[in-house]
Length: 196
Image (cartoon, rainbow, N blue to C red; front, side):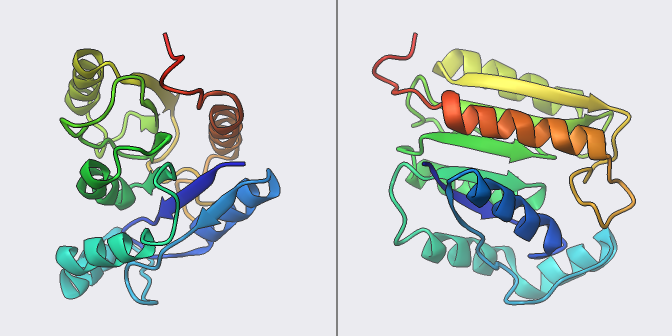
């Protein structure tokens, strides 16, 4: 059983995140889904960016930090699109995290991340929000810092392909993503002390 904190996209905490959490819980894991927008949601990216402007990034990160107060230090951090930015900001404070899962966007590795930390990136290809240079920078940082990074790209899928309510939804890519995430949680989070 793994503890996870799943941070939502710029559209707010919606069925996409709730369904993801339900799937992870059904596999035996403990999942929290902090509501970083205080109950507000959006239906388009433009609305989402306006909502983020109203709430403010500092408030978003503060709410995420507060949500992590009572979870174990090794809790896996999961970011969904905008949520990967939340992961970027909180990761330096949570370097004991057993792993990190990035969905639909990259994150920056903190300088303090321990070697052997395991990270997965899942993103459509092509995706304007996940340009090749960002992926290359993440790969380079992972090599330099001894992070065990797996990158999975999904050709032809839309940006937010796990959202079954959205126009980007790709059921095959979504199913493969969750299969890989669950395998990562069940078999990929070995102790850093024994990691090669």
